[in-house]
Image (cartoon, one colour):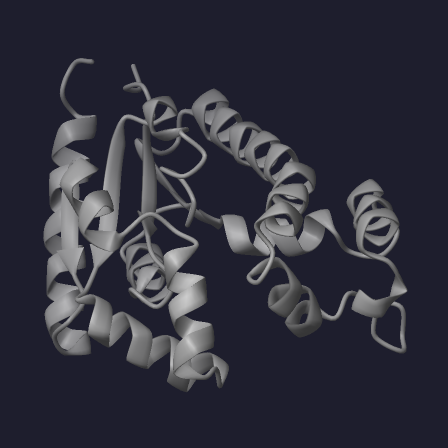
Length: 208
């Protein structure tokens, strides 16, 4: 008889290495889903989300081909808290509904015992209680800022604004069930992912 699916949320902050960790979990055989990818789908042309974003923010956030200019939208929402909340109000319900359907699908099949959803704003949206285990990818804020500046081509001030829009990473780590420190080498982080995966598989085998 299959055990109940262990629902795992992987979270952290912008630039803390969540995507790297998620990819390593997938290599180990974990079913994974990425909230950022779902968020892009939620506002793709032809969706209700796209129509709502266009109605709220206007054509200035569109590219010539009619798709959303994510850079322009990002600059807007990270400089205006009301705009950010409006966008989150459009996107988050769609994303969480998709994640719930995904977990339910795996629960019905009974073929896997652990599934992992990468949800950057898990604590900010107060949805952590919907998961059995929360894993946080964490690194020092200075490293987080440097990664964001290099990856996204942002100024220091822009990186600070984006980091400040999220719960401080040390608070997320304190709330976590398990923490992966991504401040070392890729190999060191991958080793921790393997250790966490073993713990998750062990937890899934226990009665809950």
